[in-house]
Length: 342
Image 1 (tube, rainbow, N blue to C red):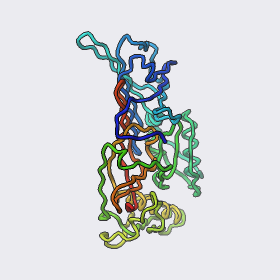
Image 2 (image 1 turned 30 degrees about the vertical axis):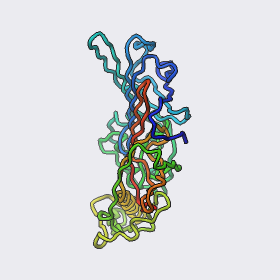
Image 3 (image 1 turned 120 degrees about the vertical axis):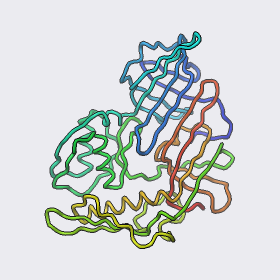
Image 4 (image 1 turned 60 degrees about the vertical axis):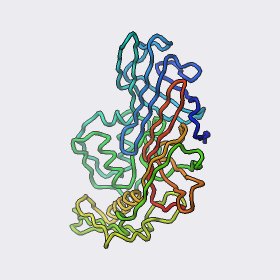
């Protein structure tokens, strides 16, 4: 993991666009970078160039690929395409702002009605990503084969996110490839107290049920289906105690009956997915550190050297990287957790 300090040191970055490599040593007029990502949104990047300083503006085209990494790391903090430009002139000074989005934007720019017969959700996902001409990343296989599934006048992104949600998964772009995975913390990035610029989080069990039950109807067998999830079904974040296991406030079970569930296994998967989603509301917060490209959506973070009972293990839910040429690079993360700090 790249070093993380509370000193806003000069940024190191490498950016490839329109056949040019832009770096700290050769900025080609680059003044600022902003990269934002969120678990439930399309990743975005914004670059600002000053005029007449090396980058040929006319070489930048819509849909041009754009990749970047920070801190000398090979991990691509952003990989996408140019989707917009903004030219401004004031007091003799020209600037060009480039806006780019990750490949999920291509799934969003669509609308279809389609029927999928006798297919698993993971197979439908793979088919859609391939038809969109995008690269398939990590796909967690699903087990149940559905008699039929409708894509109802919705974008490909809306549809694959619906498939993912009913299996407790998320759809995300990672280094230019599309994943469908369960939102578990990836890796472990340790951040000590002295390495923080700021940290702010809160925790509360008031919205945590101990159990969730999903009730549905099997239209083929004409019978009720029911699935139940409890604290043992929680995918915990870090090594702290499971916050759901002794949640004291919620009275009784959490019941859901307004969703389509055609089988017992589907009801169980949906109950597990919903309880895991709710569990991640136990702890929520925000931190700012010296720029670190490894702090991306889904990354695991362990905060260290705080008072006992306040060293949280969390999962990054959104990230924002900001770089200013000749100045510094900061990373702001918003995070969640379903375990108690140690």
